[in-house]
Length: 442
Ligand code: NAD
Image (cartoon, rainbow, N blue to C red):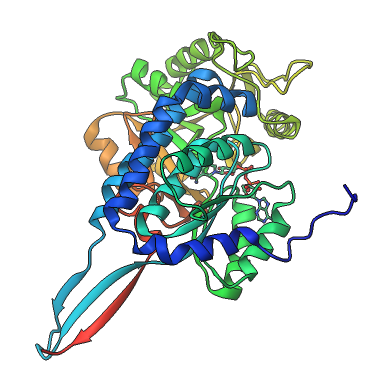
């Protein structure tokens, strides 16, 4: 070791992806689909090892890790089915003088950047549609979770992905690596999942080469409880929407907007359910809340809670990080939360449930839409009222009497500063396709 740092002026991973591209995109869609299908099966066959690795790497409970491996594998199955359905169109021009023929083609080399909170699922949600479309990829996982990505890379190779089709690069200097790759000129798509601040910065970078950009960014999910909600169902849904992954999810319920008539019983039932959770090492089978990702995360959560309490919120449960070792933050419930306080306006990314009382449906909608984010909302109450509210919310996804929205078959994405584009569903593959139109006369 010379002690000199490697410089990211060149991008060997982009070289490899660019070299592999012409053959990969010419492979029959069915052959590409079969690589994806085999990856799905291998992930399920190795679910326990992958789940254990993920828990050791980022701390979530093994139960959460197992669920994530299954969810991640489903992206490979879904896009193995979509790979053979990329279609074009034949239209007649309104004048009747010519025909409009469209082809859809892979956009080219795609750079994929993923966060640490769902290390397997966020990589799968990008790799699977990219490969299905005929793109080759460079994946750069988060600094805190490189190992899950590398394990997934091994399975893709075992499933038959040819050399150069999937390239995984780890680094603790993401800015330099990504700057070099985006400046290279051969990267034609960027798919990013992470914080809004980094996403905004990357959009300025992709502007220079006019790179197709998909952004899955932060959230500030409202969880609306109507006065006609089944409160036991609402609490069960809240526990999933708030506590999955210890609250470290972009789709997490960030603020509870509860109708005045039910705020007392809802708060009591939610507090009881939160109190019953067992905090501990993710590897302990009884653990329901593992540690947060790192010390900075704990400090950030504590800071938002403390500022909100200083502004008038009251602590019904938790609210103080235990002394070490480990990066733990306990299940916390805050009541009488001011609408402009830190926990209500910023993404908490931890196991904290702030409760805000709302007067009626209009008030709930107004508070929900007052955020710069618009990723996920949850509504508990009658179907008709819930649907009317869902129509008026500025969000990409709504859980209506459900605490979980993520589904490989559904379009995942947000409004406003929560992002651009959609992943999963029929839409997810579009991010990796370009259209050529041929004007024809015959
Ligand atoms: P982050 O923005 O810090 O990092 C995300 C990725 O970007 C990592 O791979 C990181 O290495 C890379 N990165 C960081 N700085 C960079 C730079 N200057 N240039 C290029 N790349 C850079 O986010 P995080 O802390 O890993 O994840 C948490 C955030 O992700 C939260 O805001 C959460 O809401 C969001 N998230 C969104 C979704 C979604 O689908 N909308 C899903 C999961 C997480």
